Image (tube, rainbow over all chains, first blue to last red; front, side, top):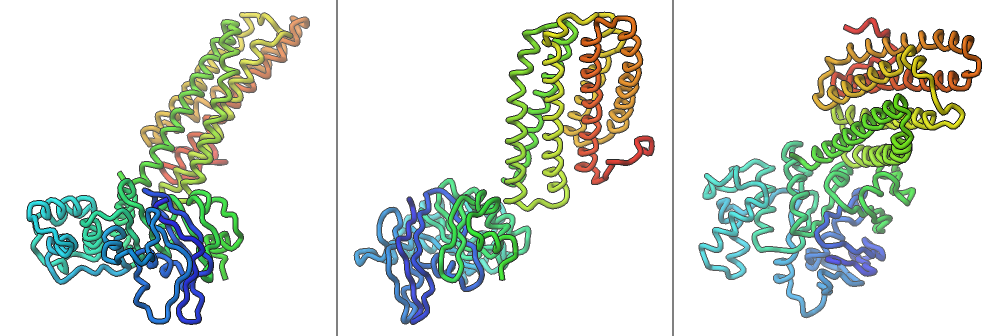
Length: 249
Length: 224
């Protein structure tokens, strides 16, 4: 398994945000996490590149494993972890730099100075993010000149440049129009050949379209985790059924 | 091509494979019946399982497609049509198998060649085969211009079926010892006539998919 959670409990102060989560996510799959607002799915996603570390009064128990290693082990360096576990956020967040520099940034801060290698990685990453054809003639223009959908694919290219094995995506298409959303979904579908992808989404149709496995969270609990086909055709839990059919609440 | 489009293309390929199998089943049934070919009849009977398997697989894949991709407009119409067409093809496969079983019946080992000619069974089966093939072409090309032709062929099949009744009634009067064979021939005629009806249903489903028009229960003569 590429990603495993073993009896994860997470607290924001006294608030018990994640309750005894156990999950095993295979490599080279897309896993969608769905559930109502405040159910804990984003909190859970952010655990896997330690984005919750700096939150005051937060407490974690249990084990988060990536490739068999507990990423909360004292020997694990957060910088090294984030090279292996990339993250893409809801709102595209390019740096105030050129398109080229955005993608090259991660390599440079990790000490890569070989210009030829950097140029190759920039091109490979933009190709992988399905953006190369649209930007190859304007690599040195500002990233802010791109559309929202292009900026999001740029952020994905930036994450891919440092060759992670896991890509975490928190609502990566929720701020985008349907055409850009479709491009991101197609991209996610293609990327699973090389990466293990976990995506949080409020859009159930998107979860169904792009993922191999789906986890349904509610009130901090993982109610059901199964193959997406099964989840959307014949869920085991009545709460899952009520949520995906819109009867929830 | 997007992965959602690839999924629906794969479904269409499966339906076309099933269609070809059913055409082959019916063609073999015709030869088995006309040439009293037991081996070919047994082959049709054994192949019926494959037709059934296609139906189950296509239904399941269409369910998954609808559940996962929430298709709308032409994609939704196509998914619904694929389910119906595969159900109908399975029924046609059943009829072909049924005719093959009558062909090897022990109660009527040799059917009078002349009565088969008089009934025009070969012509009836040729017509429904043509309807089945035209339906395939309409589906393959997403073109419904063959609709009127298919529906008029069904009328020809219906007329041959009705005439066959009178011919068989006379035949039984003149050859009372052949009553069992004659009854079997009525059943075969009925099955071929039903295949014609099902080919009609298929083209209606294709019209629904391609043109978003509902022809069901409309007067056939009202077609443009």
